[in-house]
Amino acid sequence: MDCILPEYRLSADSYKELWENCIFVLDTSVLFNIYRYSPGLREEVIDVLGKISPRLWIPYQVAYEYYDNISSVISTEISKYDSIMSIVSSNQKLVIGEIDNNLRRKHTSSSEILIDLDKNVKQLESELDKSFKKIREDIKKKISGYPKKEDFEGIDETINSLLDSKVGKPYSITELEKISDKGANRYDLLLPPGYKDKKDKIGIKLYGDLIIWFQIIDMATEKKVPVIFICDDLKEGWWWRPSGKPLGPRPELVKEFASETKELFWMYSLDRFLEYAPKYIDVEVNVKSIDEAKEYRVDEEKRVIFEDQLDKIGLFAAALDQSKWASAAACLDQFKTAGVAAALDQSKWAGMAAALDQSKWASAAACLDQFKTAGVVAALDQFNKANMVSGSGEKSESKPELSVTSNGSKPSKISRNEKGLKKTKEKKR
Image 1 (cartoon, rainbow, N blue to C red):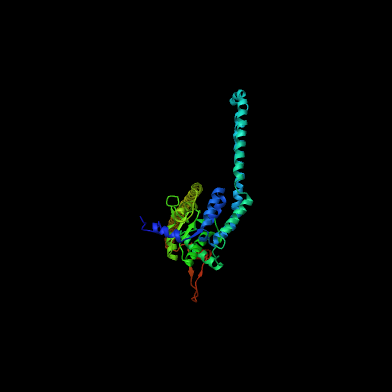
Image 2: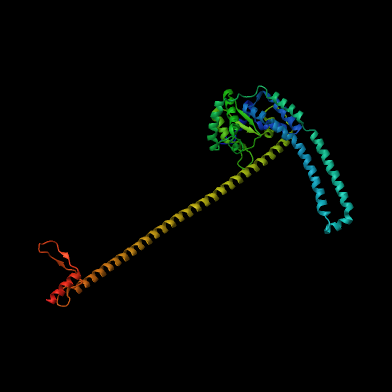
């Protein structure tokens, strides 16, 4: 049954049309895996690609990424051989070391047991040594069948011959700048491909997948052909992976390609391409080769799923940290607000208390002033009353008198001595 949304699944007729008329586009990941495969699988892949060579094509960006990283890929593959031998030797030392370090240790109960079993232990160590030696020899034989550095150079020549005159045109600096601006907007919206590269790439390399995508669209538009994209980069930027495993290309890509080119687009991993190729084109593929390529792809899927889980854990941890900091900040803000409010309340109370204290002091001062004034007035009144009447009605001696001159000038004060002398003279008379 055909899917009502062709971006999720093409019809049987569409698949047939696609395989009959398409251009097969290789991703950089496929070229690198040719170096990583066993010699038998490598030969099978190169043979199938050779048979469809007239319909092969790679974007310029793929060729650029290939030459920019191939030396690192080769070095990694060669170093794996040494790593395997190192792991075997380390495990041998670990096993024998555990026996020597733990069982042969003196002053333990196990050392007494081993006195009688020492010959057996030595025999065990000898047998382990022989077993590990055989393992190393078998590994060396296996490694001898895998390419050395000079053999890798031969693989490069084969790939160059396979893709001669089948490389797209590069973009200009101006075009790359425009793609960078578009890419930033697309990545913010999580539009494929390439947005997953934000975590580990910088500069224009951040938009490598997007450049590949635009160059595929440009080629298909120019040649008016459908495209099958063979890609072993299993990130969700290329693949629709609702349950972790890739089920097909991202629907957004299929829809965008149809909108821009009016042509069909689909994607296959290399093992699935080898599986479906005999059905649609005139090629034969060894089933063992398909199974081996599938095993490699499944291992790669597990690695990608594991990395995705780590990313999610990292995002969750980051979100948790932000949440903690946000909570801490909120608490701090509340603390500050509460502190300000408390300080403000204290200020208000302090102001009120101060005002009350001032009011009290002002009242007390006013009362004291009134008391003082009242006391002074009362004392003055008493003093005046006391001096109003003295004996026969004469004025008090303590109160100074005013004298008036005959010529009407201002009166002058008369001292008590003068008044006393006057009274004395009147009595003598």
